[in-house]
Amino acid sequence: QQPVQSPQAVILREGEDAVINCSSSKALYSVHWYRQKHGEAPVFLMILLKGGEQKGHEKISASFNEKKQQSSLYLTASQLSYSGTYFCGTEGSGAGSYQLTFGKGTKLSVIP
Amino acid sequence: EAGVAQSPRYKIIEKRQSVAFWCNPISGHATLYWYQQILGQGPKLLIQFQNNGVVDDSQLPKDRFSAERLKGVDSTLKIQPAKLEDSAVYLCASNLRVNEQFFGPGTRLTVL
Image (cartoon, rainbow over all chains, first blue to last red; front, side, top):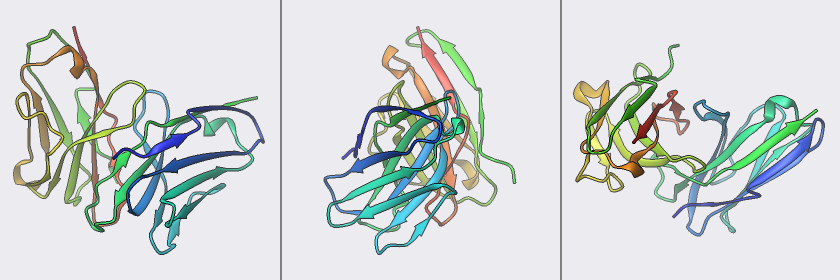
């Protein structure tokens, strides 16, 4: 089942913070975050594994609530380069499938 | 390290015609994925290969879509015959054992 992302879109001024949420109705093993700029391939940002292991990206952090099957991506002191569409991809609790189901995305626009 | 290569980058065809896409994953990556990304949506998995074997093709419309991965390296995705609703970006991704997926630039297909 496709995870639900919120908000669908957000506009920020440089330096402001943003939170993007991802929620699933099924048990998860991991949550992945990607950013896609217009006309480009998705680029990996972050992975959160069940049990708390986290791999990160500078100035971007994330949390994973295993009980609620929710993840949030935190972007602090946003820069113009943060603009793009952010996707969460969820991996079901059958660890090792390496198979992701992506949400519909959150479009982030950072303006001067 | 070279990234995931895809060709062609753009393709315009008329409905009922056939089309093929090619993907060359990152050297040594055992797992290869084909995704369909419709405008405004997240990537949707079509098929997953592990070396040259199919792991999951449950979302591949097998009446018109086919894919193969010969010798566990390059892969081709074919659509025959194409429908208007097949207009999308077709993304290829690969990974080794860790969960991060590396995406290629995609092929934008327009069916007229």
